[in-house]
Length: 112
Length: 112
Image (cartoon, rainbow over all chains, first blue to last red; front, side, top):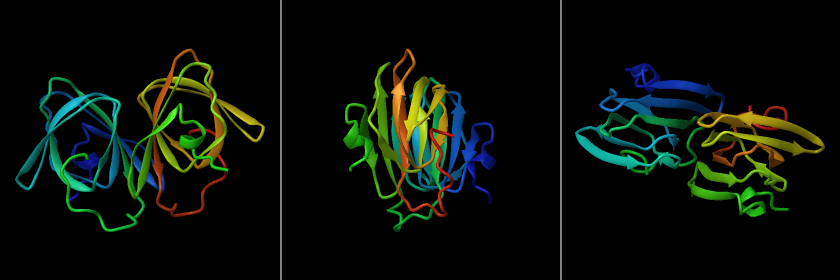
């Protein structure tokens, strides 16, 4: 199954640009929006708005409350996301394409 | 000579976080500020403000006028930068650490 977020949730994710090393996505939604499950490779998320979201996978859920204008590491993971705040979410994902130089760490849910 | 911007211009650049794959920098300045020459590896720049800057290297200069909330590719390069606008510059750099998978392209000045 294609779990590329651009395929699973084209209403919220769009490709800003792509080259040999990265693909850059823009994400935007409104309060109450919920994505279907999708996969992220190792990525850096740069927030253009604050947001409050519930992220879930395999029966586990976490809530995140992140300010605008910050950068966070997102380890490769599959999850779905729900905007549980009262404002829109607007953020950029810099997806890393190069093979990771070492084994990925234990599965993490949400940005660290 | 150490051309790491965190060393050359610690008033403007600071490390937000770093891991095996990326180093993430925050850049901020005020109108009229000019950096000394420094080096960037292949990076993605995500702008948190609009800005107008003059970038220069080896006798060449370009002027860039970039909106806030956008992502741009910055090929590995040495340059200096000057804020020639009337507003502060605030931006994030996601520096890629992994070896590039193919030879870098012809030298580019400024973001593409």
